[in-house]
Image 1 (cartoon, rainbow, N blue to C red):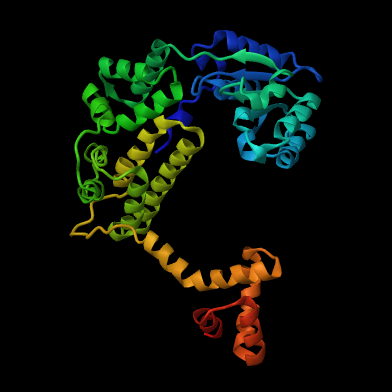
Image 2 (image 1 turned 45 degrees about the horizontal axis):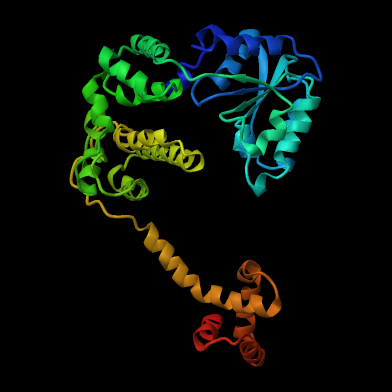
Length: 400
Protein backbone atom coordinates (compact mmCIF):
# COMPACT_ATOMS: atom_id res chain seq x y z
CA UNK A 1 0.00 0.00 0.00
CA UNK A 2 1.53 3.30 -1.10
CA UNK A 3 1.69 6.27 1.24
CA UNK A 4 -0.58 8.98 -0.12
CA UNK A 5 1.56 11.94 0.93
CA UNK A 6 4.17 10.53 -1.47
CA UNK A 7 1.71 9.40 -4.13
CA UNK A 8 -0.03 12.78 -4.26
CA UNK A 9 2.98 15.01 -3.72
CA UNK A 10 2.84 17.85 -6.27
CA UNK A 11 4.80 17.17 -9.46
CA UNK A 12 4.59 20.75 -10.75
CA UNK A 13 4.29 24.14 -9.09
CA UNK A 14 0.73 24.51 -10.38
CA UNK A 15 -0.25 21.62 -8.10
CA UNK A 16 1.02 23.41 -4.97
CA UNK A 17 -2.01 25.07 -3.40
CA UNK A 18 -2.40 28.45 -1.72
CA UNK A 19 1.21 29.73 -1.95
CA UNK A 20 1.25 31.88 -5.10
CA UNK A 21 3.49 34.66 -3.74
CA UNK A 22 5.98 32.23 -2.22
CA UNK A 23 6.13 30.17 -5.40
CA UNK A 24 6.87 33.22 -7.54
CA UNK A 25 9.75 34.12 -5.22
CA UNK A 26 11.07 30.55 -5.28
CA UNK A 27 10.90 30.34 -9.07
CA UNK A 28 12.61 33.71 -9.51
CA UNK A 29 15.36 32.89 -7.03
CA UNK A 30 16.29 29.60 -8.68
CA UNK A 31 16.11 30.81 -12.29
CA UNK A 32 18.12 34.01 -11.62
CA UNK A 33 20.63 32.57 -9.18
CA UNK A 34 24.25 33.70 -9.38
CA UNK A 35 27.24 32.79 -7.25
CA UNK A 36 27.44 34.98 -4.17
CA UNK A 37 23.68 35.59 -3.96
CA UNK A 38 22.17 35.11 -0.51
CA UNK A 39 20.59 31.70 0.12
CA UNK A 40 16.79 31.61 0.26
CA UNK A 41 15.23 30.69 3.60
CA UNK A 42 11.64 29.52 3.21
CA UNK A 43 9.65 29.13 6.39
CA UNK A 44 6.17 28.45 7.69
CA UNK A 45 4.07 25.83 9.49
CA UNK A 46 4.54 22.14 8.77
CA UNK A 47 2.64 20.56 5.92
CA UNK A 48 2.06 23.72 3.85
CA UNK A 49 4.25 22.81 0.87
CA UNK A 50 7.71 24.18 1.64
CA UNK A 51 9.82 21.15 0.75
CA UNK A 52 7.36 19.73 -1.78
CA UNK A 53 7.35 22.99 -3.76
CA UNK A 54 11.14 22.79 -4.15
CA UNK A 55 10.82 19.24 -5.46
CA UNK A 56 7.98 20.28 -7.77
CA UNK A 57 10.12 23.09 -9.20
CA UNK A 58 13.04 20.72 -9.69
CA UNK A 59 10.85 18.13 -11.39
CA UNK A 60 9.33 20.76 -13.67
CA UNK A 61 12.71 22.12 -14.75
CA UNK A 62 14.83 18.94 -14.68
CA UNK A 63 17.00 20.01 -11.74
CA UNK A 64 18.84 17.56 -9.53
CA UNK A 65 18.12 18.07 -5.82
CA UNK A 66 20.71 17.36 -3.18
CA UNK A 67 18.80 17.32 0.11
CA UNK A 68 20.37 17.19 3.54
CA UNK A 69 18.58 17.32 6.87
CA UNK A 70 20.38 19.66 9.24
CA UNK A 71 18.93 18.04 12.33
CA UNK A 72 20.24 14.64 11.23
CA UNK A 73 23.76 15.87 10.43
CA UNK A 74 23.94 17.85 13.69
CA UNK A 75 27.55 19.03 14.08
CA UNK A 76 30.03 20.96 11.95
CA UNK A 77 32.13 17.94 10.92
CA UNK A 78 29.22 15.96 9.51
CA UNK A 79 27.73 19.03 7.82
CA UNK A 80 31.06 19.90 6.16
CA UNK A 81 31.51 16.30 5.05
CA UNK A 82 28.07 15.80 3.48
CA UNK A 83 26.94 19.28 2.45
CA UNK A 84 30.43 20.42 1.50
CA UNK A 85 30.85 17.53 -0.90
CA UNK A 86 27.44 18.15 -2.47
CA UNK A 87 28.16 21.84 -3.07
CA UNK A 88 31.59 21.26 -4.61
CA UNK A 89 30.65 18.41 -6.96
CA UNK A 90 28.92 18.80 -10.29
CA UNK A 91 25.73 16.84 -10.93
CA UNK A 92 26.36 13.23 -11.91
CA UNK A 93 24.37 13.67 -15.14
CA UNK A 94 25.44 17.28 -15.79
CA UNK A 95 22.06 18.58 -14.68
CA UNK A 96 21.39 21.85 -12.92
CA UNK A 97 21.40 21.40 -9.19
CA UNK A 98 19.53 22.73 -6.14
CA UNK A 99 21.00 22.42 -2.64
CA UNK A 100 18.16 21.87 -0.16
CA UNK A 101 18.88 22.05 3.58
CA UNK A 102 15.79 21.00 5.53
CA UNK A 103 14.92 21.54 9.21
CA UNK A 104 17.66 24.03 9.96
CA UNK A 105 15.74 25.17 13.03
CA UNK A 106 16.24 21.65 14.38
CA UNK A 107 19.84 22.49 15.24
CA UNK A 108 20.06 23.16 18.98
CA UNK A 109 22.17 22.45 22.00
CA UNK A 110 25.82 21.75 22.62
CA UNK A 111 25.94 18.74 20.32
CA UNK A 112 25.21 21.07 17.37
CA UNK A 113 27.91 23.60 18.19
CA UNK A 114 29.40 24.90 14.97
CA UNK A 115 26.62 23.45 12.82
CA UNK A 116 24.96 26.76 12.00
CA UNK A 117 28.30 28.40 11.22
CA UNK A 118 29.25 25.47 8.96
CA UNK A 119 26.00 25.75 6.97
CA UNK A 120 26.42 29.51 6.79
CA UNK A 121 29.93 29.24 5.38
CA UNK A 122 29.10 26.54 2.84
CA UNK A 123 25.95 28.02 1.32
CA UNK A 124 27.66 31.40 0.93
CA UNK A 125 30.20 29.79 -1.40
CA UNK A 126 27.73 27.64 -3.33
CA UNK A 127 27.56 28.07 -7.07
CA UNK A 128 24.18 26.33 -6.99
CA UNK A 129 20.90 27.76 -5.64
CA UNK A 130 20.80 27.03 -1.90
CA UNK A 131 17.39 26.79 -0.27
CA UNK A 132 17.01 26.44 3.48
CA UNK A 133 13.78 25.26 5.11
CA UNK A 134 12.53 25.98 8.62
CA UNK A 135 9.30 25.93 10.57
CA UNK A 136 10.42 28.77 12.83
CA UNK A 137 13.21 30.96 11.41
CA UNK A 138 13.28 33.21 14.47
CA UNK A 139 14.83 30.71 16.86
CA UNK A 140 17.89 32.14 18.57
CA UNK A 141 20.11 29.26 17.51
CA UNK A 142 19.87 30.19 13.80
CA UNK A 143 19.81 33.99 14.18
CA UNK A 144 23.23 34.42 12.54
CA UNK A 145 22.17 32.30 9.57
CA UNK A 146 18.83 34.06 9.17
CA UNK A 147 20.53 37.46 8.86
CA UNK A 148 22.44 36.27 5.80
CA UNK A 149 19.41 34.85 3.97
CA UNK A 150 16.50 36.12 1.95
CA UNK A 151 13.31 35.13 3.75
CA UNK A 152 10.07 33.93 2.18
CA UNK A 153 7.11 32.88 4.27
CA UNK A 154 4.68 30.07 3.44
CA UNK A 155 1.30 30.62 5.09
CA UNK A 156 -0.98 28.03 6.64
CA UNK A 157 -3.44 26.81 4.02
CA UNK A 158 -7.09 27.81 4.02
CA UNK A 159 -9.33 24.86 4.76
CA UNK A 160 -11.05 25.38 1.38
CA UNK A 161 -7.77 24.66 -0.44
CA UNK A 162 -7.29 21.51 1.62
CA UNK A 163 -10.91 20.45 1.07
CA UNK A 164 -10.56 20.85 -2.69
CA UNK A 165 -7.44 18.67 -2.77
CA UNK A 166 -9.00 16.00 -0.55
CA UNK A 167 -11.97 15.76 -2.91
CA UNK A 168 -9.61 15.14 -5.85
CA UNK A 169 -7.89 12.35 -3.94
CA UNK A 170 -11.24 10.78 -3.05
CA UNK A 171 -12.23 10.84 -6.71
CA UNK A 172 -8.99 9.16 -7.81
CA UNK A 173 -9.06 6.56 -5.02
CA UNK A 174 -12.78 5.78 -5.39
CA UNK A 175 -13.62 6.90 -1.86
CA UNK A 176 -17.21 7.77 -1.01
CA UNK A 177 -16.87 10.64 1.44
CA UNK A 178 -19.54 12.78 3.07
CA UNK A 179 -19.08 16.49 2.42
CA UNK A 180 -19.55 17.08 6.15
CA UNK A 181 -16.80 14.60 7.02
CA UNK A 182 -14.34 16.03 4.48
CA UNK A 183 -15.06 19.59 5.59
CA UNK A 184 -14.59 18.59 9.24
CA UNK A 185 -11.30 16.89 8.39
CA UNK A 186 -10.05 19.87 6.37
CA UNK A 187 -10.86 22.25 9.22
CA UNK A 188 -9.36 20.07 11.94
CA UNK A 189 -5.77 19.99 10.62
CA UNK A 190 -5.04 23.69 11.09
CA UNK A 191 -3.79 24.40 7.56
CA UNK A 192 -1.57 21.29 7.36
CA UNK A 193 -2.11 19.59 3.99
CA UNK A 194 0.19 16.69 4.81
CA UNK A 195 -1.73 15.90 8.00
CA UNK A 196 -5.02 16.08 6.10
CA UNK A 197 -3.85 13.57 3.47
CA UNK A 198 -2.48 11.25 6.16
CA UNK A 199 -5.77 11.42 8.05
CA UNK A 200 -7.79 10.79 4.92
CA UNK A 201 -5.77 7.66 4.14
CA UNK A 202 -6.01 6.46 7.74
CA UNK A 203 -9.76 6.96 8.14
CA UNK A 204 -10.96 5.87 4.68
CA UNK A 205 -9.77 2.31 5.17
CA UNK A 206 -12.98 0.79 3.71
CA UNK A 207 -13.22 3.24 0.79
CA UNK A 208 -15.67 5.50 2.56
CA UNK A 209 -15.50 8.33 5.04
CA UNK A 210 -18.34 9.52 7.24
CA UNK A 211 -18.58 11.93 10.12
CA UNK A 212 -19.13 8.90 12.35
CA UNK A 213 -15.74 7.48 11.27
CA UNK A 214 -14.00 10.69 12.34
CA UNK A 215 -15.83 10.85 15.64
CA UNK A 216 -14.94 7.22 16.31
CA UNK A 217 -11.29 7.76 15.44
CA UNK A 218 -10.88 10.77 17.74
CA UNK A 219 -12.85 9.54 20.76
CA UNK A 220 -11.30 7.65 23.71
CA UNK A 221 -13.91 7.50 26.46
CA UNK A 222 -14.38 3.99 27.84
CA UNK A 223 -12.11 1.42 29.43
CA UNK A 224 -11.27 -1.89 27.81
CA UNK A 225 -8.78 -4.57 28.68
CA UNK A 226 -5.67 -4.78 26.55
CA UNK A 227 -6.33 -8.49 25.89
CA UNK A 228 -9.68 -7.69 24.29
CA UNK A 229 -8.02 -5.04 22.17
CA UNK A 230 -5.41 -7.54 20.97
CA UNK A 231 -8.14 -10.01 20.05
CA UNK A 232 -9.83 -7.34 17.93
CA UNK A 233 -6.54 -6.65 16.12
CA UNK A 234 -5.17 -10.16 15.70
CA UNK A 235 -8.45 -11.97 14.99
CA UNK A 236 -9.79 -9.77 12.20
CA UNK A 237 -8.93 -8.78 8.66
CA UNK A 238 -11.32 -5.83 8.80
CA UNK A 239 -9.77 -2.42 9.32
CA UNK A 240 -13.15 -1.15 10.51
CA UNK A 241 -13.06 -3.60 13.41
CA UNK A 242 -9.40 -3.07 14.30
CA UNK A 243 -9.09 0.71 13.92
CA UNK A 244 -10.61 1.58 17.30
CA UNK A 245 -9.22 -1.41 19.22
CA UNK A 246 -6.93 0.66 21.46
CA UNK A 247 -9.20 3.68 21.82
CA UNK A 248 -10.32 2.73 25.30
CA UNK A 249 -7.46 0.78 26.85
CA UNK A 250 -5.79 2.16 29.95
CA UNK A 251 -2.24 1.28 28.89
CA UNK A 252 -0.15 4.07 27.41
CA UNK A 253 1.38 3.93 23.94
CA UNK A 254 4.73 2.50 25.09
CA UNK A 255 2.98 -0.41 26.81
CA UNK A 256 0.83 -1.10 23.75
CA UNK A 257 4.01 -1.29 21.66
CA UNK A 258 5.44 -3.89 24.05
CA UNK A 259 2.24 -5.97 24.10
CA UNK A 260 2.05 -6.07 20.30
CA UNK A 261 5.76 -6.78 19.83
CA UNK A 262 5.54 -9.71 22.26
CA UNK A 263 2.44 -11.29 20.73
CA UNK A 264 2.88 -10.83 16.98
CA UNK A 265 5.04 -14.00 16.71
CA UNK A 266 2.50 -15.94 18.79
CA UNK A 267 -0.33 -15.10 16.40
CA UNK A 268 1.28 -14.74 12.97
CA UNK A 269 3.11 -17.88 11.92
CA UNK A 270 3.54 -17.18 8.19
CA UNK A 271 6.80 -15.43 7.39
CA UNK A 272 5.25 -12.87 5.03
CA UNK A 273 2.54 -11.95 7.58
CA UNK A 274 5.14 -11.68 10.32
CA UNK A 275 7.35 -9.43 8.19
CA UNK A 276 4.47 -7.14 7.23
CA UNK A 277 3.29 -6.85 10.84
CA UNK A 278 6.75 -5.90 12.10
CA UNK A 279 7.08 -3.40 9.23
CA UNK A 280 3.93 -1.65 10.43
CA UNK A 281 5.17 -1.80 14.02
CA UNK A 282 8.46 -0.22 12.93
CA UNK A 283 6.64 2.55 11.03
CA UNK A 284 4.57 3.30 14.14
CA UNK A 285 7.82 3.54 16.08
CA UNK A 286 9.14 6.07 13.56
CA UNK A 287 6.12 8.30 14.19
CA UNK A 288 6.56 7.85 17.95
CA UNK A 289 10.16 9.02 17.61
CA UNK A 290 9.03 12.13 15.75
CA UNK A 291 6.53 12.88 18.50
CA UNK A 292 9.30 12.74 21.09
CA UNK A 293 11.79 14.70 19.01
CA UNK A 294 9.57 17.42 17.60
CA UNK A 295 6.41 17.27 19.78
CA UNK A 296 4.28 16.60 16.67
CA UNK A 297 1.41 15.27 18.75
CA UNK A 298 -0.84 14.83 15.72
CA UNK A 299 1.32 11.81 14.87
CA UNK A 300 -0.29 9.89 17.73
CA UNK A 301 -3.20 9.06 15.46
CA UNK A 302 -0.81 7.48 12.92
CA UNK A 303 0.81 5.39 15.65
CA UNK A 304 -2.54 4.02 16.78
CA UNK A 305 -3.74 3.40 13.22
CA UNK A 306 -0.60 1.44 12.35
CA UNK A 307 -0.77 -0.55 15.60
CA UNK A 308 -4.42 -1.43 15.04
CA UNK A 309 -5.52 -1.52 11.39
CA UNK A 310 -1.93 -1.81 10.15
CA UNK A 311 -1.23 -4.93 12.21
CA UNK A 312 -4.67 -6.43 11.47
CA UNK A 313 -4.26 -6.07 7.70
CA UNK A 314 -0.76 -7.55 7.72
CA UNK A 315 -2.21 -11.03 7.32
CA UNK A 316 -3.96 -12.56 4.32
CA UNK A 317 -6.54 -14.34 6.44
CA UNK A 318 -7.47 -14.88 10.07
CA UNK A 319 -5.53 -17.53 11.99
CA UNK A 320 -7.81 -20.15 13.54
CA UNK A 321 -7.69 -21.31 17.14
CA UNK A 322 -7.13 -19.63 20.50
CA UNK A 323 -3.93 -17.75 21.29
CA UNK A 324 -2.98 -16.88 24.84
CA UNK A 325 -1.65 -13.33 24.75
CA UNK A 326 1.02 -12.53 27.32
CA UNK A 327 2.61 -9.30 28.57
CA UNK A 328 6.06 -8.48 27.33
CA UNK A 329 9.03 -10.43 28.60
CA UNK A 330 11.49 -7.81 27.38
CA UNK A 331 11.61 -6.02 30.73
CA UNK A 332 12.16 -9.36 32.50
CA UNK A 333 14.96 -10.23 30.08
CA UNK A 334 16.59 -6.86 30.69
CA UNK A 335 16.34 -7.39 34.45
CA UNK A 336 17.86 -10.90 34.18
CA UNK A 337 20.69 -9.58 32.02
CA UNK A 338 21.34 -6.80 34.52
CA UNK A 339 21.37 -9.31 37.37
CA UNK A 340 23.75 -11.54 35.46
CA UNK A 341 26.10 -8.64 34.84
CA UNK A 342 25.69 -6.97 38.23
CA UNK A 343 28.77 -8.64 39.73
CA UNK A 344 30.84 -7.87 36.65
CA UNK A 345 29.80 -4.21 36.77
CA UNK A 346 30.47 -3.93 40.53
CA UNK A 347 33.98 -5.34 40.06
CA UNK A 348 34.58 -3.06 37.08
CA UNK A 349 33.58 -0.02 39.13
CA UNK A 350 36.04 -0.92 41.90
CA UNK A 351 38.76 -1.58 39.35
CA UNK A 352 38.06 1.73 37.58
CA UNK A 353 38.34 3.70 40.83
CA UNK A 354 41.63 2.11 41.79
CA UNK A 355 43.23 2.38 38.35
CA UNK A 356 41.76 5.76 37.38
CA UNK A 357 40.16 4.45 34.22
CA UNK A 358 36.59 4.30 32.92
CA UNK A 359 34.06 1.73 34.06
CA UNK A 360 33.23 1.05 30.42
CA UNK A 361 36.80 0.07 29.60
CA UNK A 362 37.01 -2.05 32.73
CA UNK A 363 33.83 -3.92 31.77
CA UNK A 364 34.91 -4.47 28.18
CA UNK A 365 38.44 -5.72 28.73
CA UNK A 366 40.08 -5.44 32.16
CA UNK A 367 37.65 -7.70 34.02
CA UNK A 368 38.40 -10.49 31.53
CA UNK A 369 42.09 -10.35 32.49
CA UNK A 370 41.12 -10.57 36.16
CA UNK A 371 39.09 -13.71 35.51
CA UNK A 372 42.10 -15.36 33.91
CA UNK A 373 44.34 -14.39 36.83
CA UNK A 374 41.85 -15.59 39.45
CA UNK A 375 41.55 -18.96 37.74
CA UNK A 376 45.30 -19.57 37.32
CA UNK A 377 47.20 -17.66 40.00
CA UNK A 378 45.97 -18.02 43.59
CA UNK A 379 48.64 -15.81 45.16
CA UNK A 380 48.15 -12.95 42.70
CA UNK A 381 44.36 -13.21 42.94
CA UNK A 382 44.52 -12.78 46.72
CA UNK A 383 46.70 -9.69 46.34
CA UNK A 384 44.32 -8.17 43.76
CA UNK A 385 41.30 -9.07 45.88
CA UNK A 386 42.71 -7.16 48.86
CA UNK A 387 43.73 -4.23 46.67
CA UNK A 388 40.26 -3.89 45.09
CA UNK A 389 38.45 -4.75 48.36
CA UNK A 390 36.38 -7.47 46.69
CA UNK A 391 33.78 -9.39 48.70
CA UNK A 392 33.37 -13.18 48.69
CA UNK A 393 30.66 -13.21 46.02
CA UNK A 394 32.76 -11.09 43.68
CA UNK A 395 35.79 -13.33 44.16
CA UNK A 396 33.61 -16.38 43.50
CA UNK A 397 32.33 -14.78 40.30
CA UNK A 398 35.88 -14.15 39.06
CA UNK A 399 36.82 -17.76 39.80
CA UNK A 400 33.71 -19.24 38.18
